[in-house]
Image 1 (tube, helix red, strand yellow):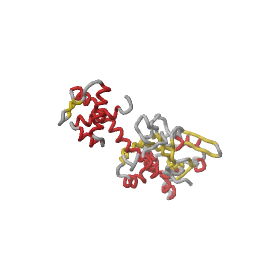
Image 2 (cartoon, helix red, strand yellow):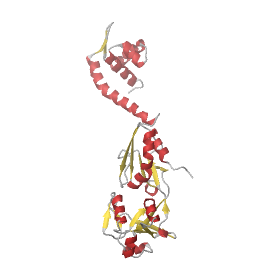
Image 3 (spheres, one colour):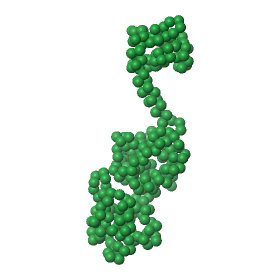
Length: 297
């Protein structure tokens, strides 16, 4: 299509719908004479008469009617595309889809969502909680929130949470019946509550580090779950040892309801990051980043 032809086709559609050069010219902010000249030029280029003119009216010819039926859906699609650009400018608005996992949803998103939604009433925020790593582009997500070590290197990543630590805990009643483990190898002698990852189907490894030595174990146990709430409830009920985020059990450790073991084997690690596939972001995503981003130290 030559330069300017789309404008001429849109102008023809306006004239055909309005059945008046004067009304169509006002809609298009052109003079009636300029619009009439453009229509004659379009007819000459296409080699067919599109408009039947009289001194008092104008109407599409049969060829013009056929062209109009073809143009209407195409022009509507163009209008929708231009309208969608509003998501990229001005006030934050539109739908924002985020994928994350349970702990990040609870620690990062839940505290910030009420204020974020109040401050941005034109944003529809959809959060999908799933342990699996999701392809953002293929699944229509604007961003994801995961631990930093899980974020692919080709993503833009923004820190949205503090350093975290995973600890091993059990109830006092459990340790009345079982000795406390001194090393990760001792976990083989304990009942442990394991967590099954939904993505690959394997068990979540328990990761440790001490004096530069890294150890990954998958301890034995009678119970395997894929729900954090059920896992935590089982550990708190004395079913076995649990591998849990320290932030989730800090109060219970402090007041003695849970006992922490292998403390020196549990270093901190980088917390949660919000990540997305492009450095160009919509105002809606920028607003979420601003709401969640951890200030630089």
